[in-house]
Length: 220
Image (cartoon, rainbow, N blue to C red; front, side, top):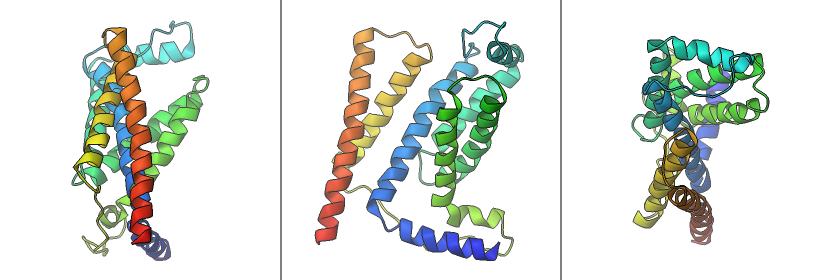
């Protein structure tokens, strides 16, 4: 285990110096939060997650969870909390641990029941949560190694300027709007398509800015 820990730390020190990987991590956090927060809020508010008939085993499974009441809302609250925690640098490690537990549970549910193509969505989310665990391994490792130092000096990255930070924030907010509509929020369709367009544009712009800033740093 110590050899594995040493390898992870070595890889982490390298990864934390890569501007593109930092931006990839931010994008991953945003995408996971966008997927979890609206979905969790549906449960917190006591609404059904699906309109599938209970004659279908998937519909029956969700109906049993829905009828549980407080447990259904607890699941939703946990999803919302995980989605919020991974968005902030100070709480990202805790959010990653919580997110991993939730998405691992969801993934195994989707492969245990007839969820059609859903595992093709939940599996990448599971892999993304492992990436977030790796990214904050220096904070999480004391959970696995009793004598591991509580803090490890690792490179800290940040977005280049206010404009780039604004792109990520706008992408997050528009993404939340899009997924909220997909989860039942009633808004005018023009507003939905506007939010969708902004979300896609923000994603592309963030990618382009990341490449441009990376190249400018390499040339320097």
